[in-house]
Length: 237
Image (tube, rainbow, N blue to C red; front, side, top):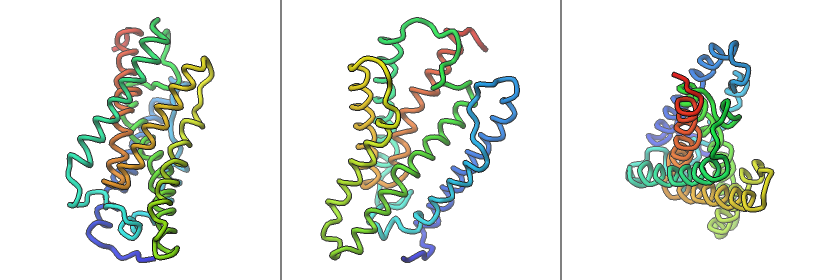
């Protein structure tokens, strides 16, 4: 494996460090808020250290046939604008189906999938980062690297589609809701759909594109919905 520090790799590392620092700030902020709020979800420092598992894969993006985080071969439209829009669409769908249709009555407290604003910005941006490291960066890069070592990458495209499908199934199966069959089918369908698009954009435009899809979703579903519930339904601020 070639761990040479190229320009793309340097940008990968700097971006990864910046995301780690955001997560660290979130831990400090969460710990400061945690005492009076027993339901607050706070990362542990051990949790943050686990994120270092993604660092070796930052050096292997080019070898695996993946764009660097900020590769000049990828436009900002491909890397940021379109992925963010995709995520926002999925977030709006979740709000319409789960909040507007299935739970139109006001909440009397923040449900488990929402956290106080502005702490929610730190928690869910870090959560998006974590998921993309362990659902995309590590497994898909690893599988594509195997392809480069097997039969001169003859089966690389097949391995990618296998990786895309398997990594796209993980989240919806892990978060399978209880309730009606309609809700279960909706959650499986949209969960698989968004993750599959993330795998495609990861291959096409790099890690940041996959991350921006999830950030767009979390912006609507976790952050802005949480702010709405706090302000309108709970009368806070």
